[in-house]
Length: 115
Image (cartoon, rainbow, N blue to C red):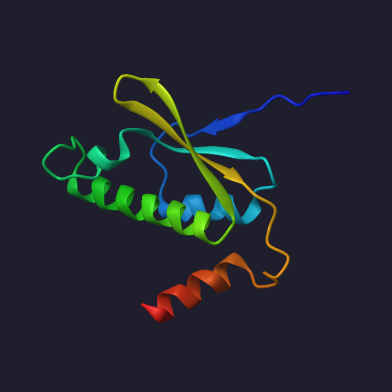
């Protein structure tokens, strides 16, 4: 029996919400993407974060989109401790839901219209 190594794609720079959505749309089950490294809740908190306002706002959108993708059954969200108060936030692609004959872009549009 052959085993396949688990490979996590790590971005060389912070990801945007749009880049995360693009990855979710094309990912095959088992693909892994590290979408943030740090301490997400602290990195999005204005007083504690060392990020600019724009970078922090983008990280909030990214975190919200990752959670949304998990709620839709598109990804599993996991964390890996990389050091004291530091984590790798990883999305693992799931098989696309059978009932979802709609595309990811259609789901995103429906969500925007509902808001």
